[in-house]
Length: 142
Image (cartoon, rainbow, N blue to C red; front, top):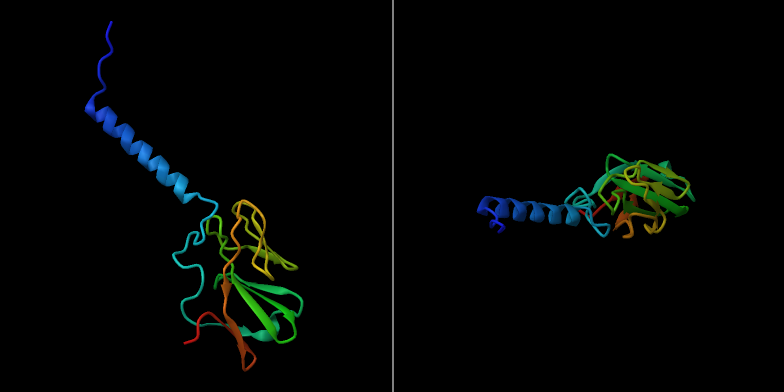
């Protein structure tokens, strides 16, 4: 009894499936720095409103703008992308100074951007921020 060679169509279908599987693995990389958006940080200035909305010693999530801002001391602000570096979901809440990603459970220190709990291992990218006339402006200068 001899085995028949695989039909050309069967071989090609198998090659296509193997390639698609490889793309799926690449898309789920825990080292993704961009996540779901092409650019996880603002490309133009973003007016976040009143600076005093961010409590001294605390942080505030600006979910629509995909930003999180902390205020370590009076008049000092730091901002980070609120887009999880694992799969690109936007953080859903900040408790104290810890940001949570509801998609896969990653947690971040929003005062440093550091990933505290995986699957994310890459820190949140820092975003330039300034306080001008009582308002917070995040992103690059115009």
